[in-house]
Image: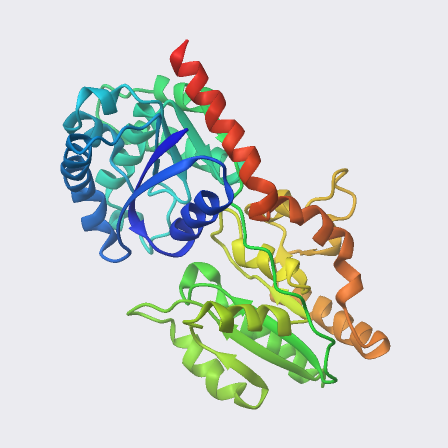
Length: 375
């Protein structure tokens, strides 16, 4: 199959998804993309930009069998601008995130234009893919709430229409490089997330303060992308925990990020907003023991087949329980010299999301969608 992929925000998880699938899958790809900045402008102008590019490519003989875009795309607008042969293609939208539930300080700050773009994109697509069941359900719940805000003509039937064509397809991750023998030292804790309020860094640093109070030795790597406004807690923590720091800040090179994963004994998330948790999966596959809150998408991502072992990796979401779990792991490390074997069964399960294993599943899924469109 020949896939036309449209990505208005070609960076982060969006880029990793397209690169990983197109390189590991069996289909041929044409990827039209825009640099990952000024996301609001991207959502507004990408349809016009891509429609122009597609018309030029068609004049040069390009043809496709399926259209794929991300949630950043105004698909309905694009299809209105594109030639008929493009409008007739089966279209799949992949929701990495959405603008209905993206965290804002005050609900009055939310721009409903972008939320409605998510709605029309989902309605225009033949299939709507989400990276987790949690994401699908929270999106559809929020969509119902949004429609109730409308003064009249609320299209409540849209919720059911989108649900009916929704599928859950977790994103793939790159296979981890091999982990070397652990060098001696205290518990090495990794926190890897955007340096923003919705990742709840204050709880992480509060847990570290409790470890200090208990005289638990530890090292930390606090990595992740930073934007113009960084929560003040990072500057405070950088000073307070300076003697514990191995890595601090965004790791620009993939090799440096992978090194942080491979060095970690424990990966910690304190997020209050997360639709999958790619860094948590990557760290786990690299050999780190995950400690993630029992909320959001984490229970489904880290659940065992019978849901009987997930509590090994899920804490109750409080800094106090996180500190207790870290204290126990530090004691275990002191006794065994390594935590690598502690999560081996989890790593075995998570390997299904490595791109060499996952790409075939996604390839088959879009083949089914294309076949339905032809009937």
